[in-house]
Image (cartoon, rainbow, N blue to C red; front, side, top):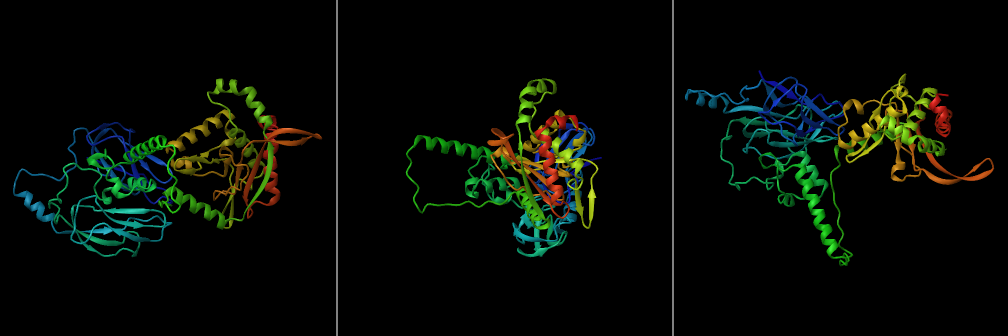
Length: 501
């Protein structure tokens, strides 16, 4: 009996996801826990594994398709089991009966289930009109929410018989917006076209990820038709777009190199490019704005002499790397200092939930990581139980996963305090924004040599400005300053930090 392969349950804040990569194809034999497909959300890439040994009978949704939580995307059966297909009969008389039964059946077209945080949606674009013959999984209409654009596809072959809600209408989750007549006109011949399927198809045939890639690179539909498509059934893929953009950039670079004295651009020859925000960027924007509007955020500053830590790294770097297999960086010292300060100032390790203050008796620190898709904050958990080497390995693993888009929901969830390092980009000082529902965030900055007065003498020391943004509703000035001074003192005397003094 076939087993349904479904999209995992998505977090409440995630409206939908995209099929990123299928690692198998129909007919492949798989083993239990083998990764079948990567599902991409605006935060992480989820791996869907085989629940048991068997054979892939059918792949329902291809790479690039937009899918919802718990939606069926494939079917798995026992080895040798026949693929899922309409039942055939040796008796010729049964075929017409089946056709007549399916023909004329009405199928409702509904708005997908919306997340709890999304009240309603808007009909953006109908890609088919009443009377049009459509194929199963063909995109019929785009539904726009305040977070994403959802595609509603045809559940069966047939004819779109009626549109109940026009473009611009406000609709609710699971509301009926159209009707499809099953079987009607499904066998009608397609319009004449070139024998070879290429990316000259209409934009409706492009997957969401491909359309996003085209938009981000300013490629028009006409230009997209020139891109060589290598996907299944001649479909254009994100990789095709990336290869085209890379080749185009190389050709442009070669052309520029051959014409070093290019004519100046005319004064009036100015252009601009408009691209839609990615889902991650939209979500980051929403959270930052929410933090600004819903917290009483203040920032206090201090500076720390980094020379003691730099001296320790210089002396023990080689032996540390030889023993633990990883280089010792600055972030592990900061995580350790922050953890100790959180123990001393529990308000900074707490959060506000309605009219209650929630004090956490554990220490999970979020580490801001810059990735090609935007800023993410994976969580290093139970930092009070980790050594410096374990911290370094954990930070490195989270950074690599963030870069490769392999962070899991668990690694992105939680966190009582955040550390962000703008210094890697050259920032000298900044006011970081709190990551709700956390109470505070520490900003690290560029290490810069400055003249400092030490025991009545001027010395050139490697100094770093520290910035602590905090929610004044929960943390008072005394606690915020004391917290930051504690971090400064521990970093400037790392012996106390390592000896837990």
